[in-house]
Length: 303
Image (cartoon, rainbow, N blue to C red; front, side, top):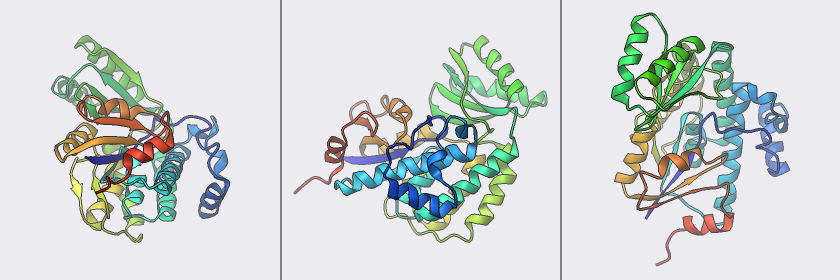
């Protein structure tokens, strides 16, 4: 049975998510960034895209290190949006210190691009073929609203200005959507509105050493296995302005023999999304599961 380790994206954060992490680990992160990271998870700080993304990276990698210390292993890794960075670290392709610096830059670029009046909205209950005509109609009328995430067949996410997203959400309800919910994300991620920022990040990543992943790395953007450093470099740089196909990534993992998905903190959002795909397998989240039990599930089978 193959295992997939997954790291969540923005929206999973919560105040206090770094509390209780080892002091020496947080101290190291602070030294790398040149600022005290223990304050990044306050309710006020989490209004910043930069703080959110750093918290997700730090919490995810610290949890994975604890599991590894107990003998846990994994066959595949994947990350939703910012989750791609801890996934790359877990795969042995990106140094954690470099990831901290890159994520700090990524979050700042995204925040500065559209500091107010933009974001993301989840559209539940419509399939892609039902939502696409509404998007095309809105774009034809001049609205910069785009498909951002395919999280599940009937759980889609759009990005753009607040007014345009609200109008499209109302149109989606008329077409049968059960919900149009504004997400706790302050930037219009995974759409052309961040193309310029992605290019700036690509310039920074070009000077960072990356390696071919030692674990099988599934891209959350195109649901493909990325086997070399250059492909991973492009994936990390440009996933902020590309549609996320998380649903496709899960199906790809299942078709490759994965029957256990383990979600790193914070939260259990990705666990919920995976249940229907791994209906004859198992899904588990770091939060809410005893760490020794989780590590036992993830240890290599003895011969």
